[in-house]
Length: 111
Image (cartoon, rainbow, N blue to C red):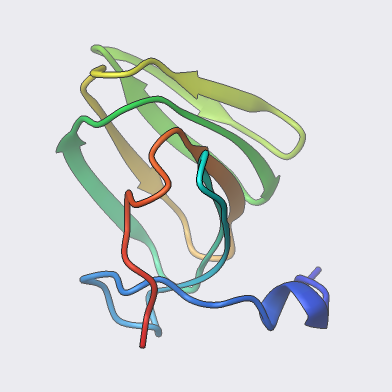
């Protein structure tokens, strides 16, 4: 199910990935950043770390490795990545997740 029009009207992030791979719709406050990610193609996110992140799978699945432990998350399942934890992900096409970042400026807004 696609995201509602009002969510798809939220601003996008300026990411180093093309829109045919992943699109974003965001809500930003002074306290954090909430991002709806829609993956249009299979996607591999290499290991990295940053401040805290919480997310949930809305559609599809997400194979997430956090501090060396790998688990697959399905719709309705949530994950929490502690601040500083090294993590990576494998995301199949068609997956939609919402992630909330502790850092309001984790990614810049497009435009």
